[in-house]
Amino acid sequence: MAHSLSVAAPQPEATFEHRASGTRFSIQTAAGETFQTLERQGETQRVRVSYVVGSGNHAFGMLAQVGDHLFQSPLSYYTSRRAWDMAPGYEDSATPDFSRPVTLECLVCHSDKPLPVPDTLNAYRNPPFAQTAIQCDRCHGNPERHLQNPVPGTIVNPAKLSPAARDSVCEQCHLSGEVRIPNPGRSIADFRPGERVEDVYTVYVTRHSPDQKIKVISHAEQLALSACARKSGGRLWCGTCHNPHDKPERPAEYFRKRCLTCHGATLAKSHAAPGQDCIGCHMPRRPAKDGGHTAFTDHRIARRPEVESGQDTGELVAWREPDPAVRERNLALALVTAGQENGRSDQVIQGFRTLYRMEGNLSGDATALTSLGTVMLKGKQPAEAARRFARALELRPNYAPYEVNLAVALMAIGNTAEATRHLEHAVQLDPLLEQAVELLSRAYRAAGQNSKAEELLARYRTTMGITLRGNAGAGPDQDPGHRN
Image (cartoon, rainbow, N blue to C red):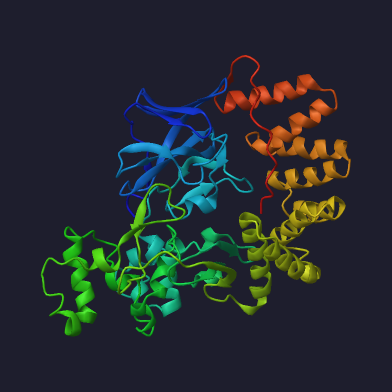
């Protein structure tokens, strides 16, 4: 965890060709700083890489900093292969670039104290982190009281918490599920040790058979499937085997001893060799379905190697149920969000119907209203969508993505002039919000204001380090996303 995020060090010069998109990437160092460049169809983009995400045990990714904005690099370095390749999620992209925003939710598990600018998608203070890598307070809470009186009881000890609160300390970063839904008025970053994650947000997982492929951030989900955890009566948790304050020099020997604390009486004779590796047989490294080009330890502690044959049922269930007051709302939002991401119209419809029925109680819930508006827009009801988006914007009037949402709905009902005003405000609030820039340039061109469109795009390209040759355009048109 001490290596979860760090300032970027100079990298050896290298190149990488992404055949799926015809993009050539290069990595260079100049004046002690690292830059990454992409070249594709007459377009070049060059950005400074400021931070490295990950310890490098498996791989590390990189964050590009443009002014006060952070964007994800589409490149990752894979340690086992000693090679650059596409980051997870970019493998099949036709237009990989440096425009994917790095939101607070992206950073909360890789950095200790990100400092976002309020009401922005990916703008941060300078510097963007009070602390980079994860610090003590991530698991032990605010240390101020303990520093004033350094005795037991003045700091959170996860092992002494109730099982749900204890496990939540680890689950805040080691359980991503299919979707995480914050409670009304809360952010995932609000979690503090001593709470249950459900006090802040609900994690929803897909009900599946035990031999379904693993995910990168699903350690807690895997462990819960193991017979060891199921038969322990809640006593087995991450801290049973892992010491977060120390990395064992001889992992096989260390973890074997941890296994034998429970299994020694029955397995000592059949597993008597001192150097035997319990983990290698019962927790093998396996490819993760969302892990790019890497393999991760399977925490299901299988008695025998399993064959990948399980199928997701697709049913979303809460990892632990939240307070009844938000239970129905959170599940509905999870269904809409996961359904849209996975192409499950049945889930979207189910979640929408619940939200629509509850709408009388959601007038102050910008996230729920945005979800309703998004489904209505997809369902060819732009006027109804605009009404929900307008209310969400009233609740967060300085949030540029909400301006974009409303503008898209207004364009769909033919109110281009009003849509343009909202897009102009979005660009004023966030000049690097790609969707706003793209849509506003289209609106200007549709109104015959080509010079304004070109000026807008030129400012964006210059700031983002994009240069063009010949008649190459600014990039493919993109549909705006609807941001919560």
